[in-house]
Length: 189
Image 1: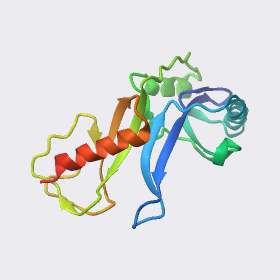
Image 2: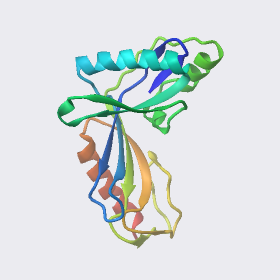
Image 3: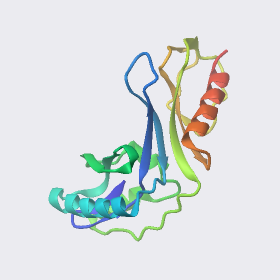
Image 4: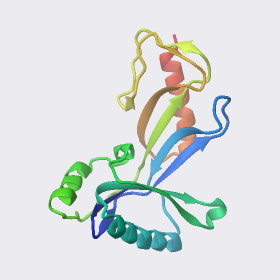
């Protein structure tokens, strides 16, 4: 994520996405994101050059997201797309006035001095069902859960149940496993 003023930019965060191919319904299933990804020194400088060029060439303003792909064994950094809009992944910016920064960049063309603490890392998880079930009538959802199903809603295998934002030092995979197990135990009757 970046905030830009058509001439320059500030990097807000680098995020890593996670997916699985282990699903009967689709060749790809999005599992979530984690903030605080660190690129190699070489790739980071390449990204800085690209971002400045993209911001100036396309007159990017406000908060934007840039999708990148790091090839196997981190050999090559590839640009996939520019999203000239606020991304849902801003949810991973905790206690940061990102909306104020967006407004300032758009209205006054001012970029903030940014100091972001990425420890512990924030993670966004999409939790999927592993079987067909009906959501219990009364579920005590955790405060960090969103996109919740209705009571007594039928959930099919591989269908999303909810999303979660967590602050943790755990690996994405271990945290995802624990969160999925907890959600499945909460919402099944």
